[in-house]
Amino acid sequence: MEDNEVLVKVEHLSKKFCKDLKTSLWYGLKDLYANVLGNKNDNSELRKKEFWAVKDINFELRRGECLGLIGHNGAGKSTLLKILNGLINPDLGKVTMRGRVCALIELGAGFNPILTGRENIYNNGAVLGFSKNEINSKIEEIIDFAEIREFIDMPVQNYSSGMKVRLGFAVAAQMEPDVLIIDEVLAVGDVGFMLKCFNRIDVLLKNTAILFVSHSMPQVSRMVNQVLLLHKGQTALQTYDVAAGITEYYNQFKVDISKDFKTDKVLIQDLKIYSDGVCHENNDSIIVSENAKFEIEISLHFYELVKNPSVYIALYDGSQRGFAEISNFNDFIKYDEVQGEMKVVFSLDNLPLSQGKYSISIGIMHLKDNVRNTLARFQSVIAFTINSENHGWVPVQFKPEWRKIK
Image (tube, rainbow, N blue to C red):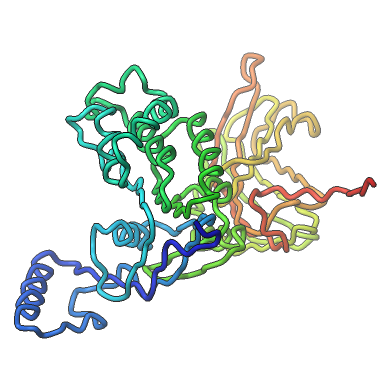
């Protein structure tokens, strides 16, 4: 077994589909007739109603590498995976795969629903090329890893989605394939099992080439050491700088900023971001330096008398994960009661954030019957981009003082 051995090689891979079923069937008949006559079709040109699902994709994946395949819905990820797994043939280019290949592409894929979990373990092991004795030596570890011992002799058709994930990953993890393809299935499992899978992948990666597909950028940053970003079927970015690849993934998305921030109780009249004193209007092209003084000015209007109002602010990253908040506003600025206009500003000396897109959500709190309640909550009221040299795996980037100790 060679370290750094190329196990997956994709060369100029392209696949086209037809938007219309009737036309697609007609093209299929024409191509079949042409093949019978020995006429070679020119697959490099699109015919009417055809489009490239993937176009001229190239990459190599070596033993010990984990490639993160990312991109929004419709980018071509599923088509590429189906070609790699041998479910469909490309129109152009070729795929070379070496060794045992295991693909976790769909929940329950590869399982016979009427067979038990135990019987499916033997079936999957046989497909991977293992003998019955080899499977016998691993089956107890598989069952223990999947944590479904009491259900292992029950038909798989009666398994929950989480149980199918557990069994599918357990088979792949314990059989130790040369190439492992994982597509979103871990998103179904619970957090505990997901962490268990990640730890197992770390062990497998020493001798395996892994293709990891996910819309969860935290999972991608945790798992992969290189990124292939697809956009409209083509390679938008291929890099070993994982954080930069994730940043570009976020840049493809536009945060949906609503313009109607009001309820029957309160209205956000205006919202402004200041960077070193420069005002940025509420739009999706606000760019802020990480080192600049950061201020948000919020103008509210209360339609009725509100006791002890306060503002809650939450910061979200590009995948809409909350990672920071500012609350207990009334501890710093006291309003006994307000009706009509109210304007507040909060400021930070800088934002220690990595390069990327962020958004802010706002909650309005008030005191009712001596209990603090939510009066209104507005999601993604403003978006901004941090201009930073840090392409971090996580949003917050601390800059401590380091000391070297001999």
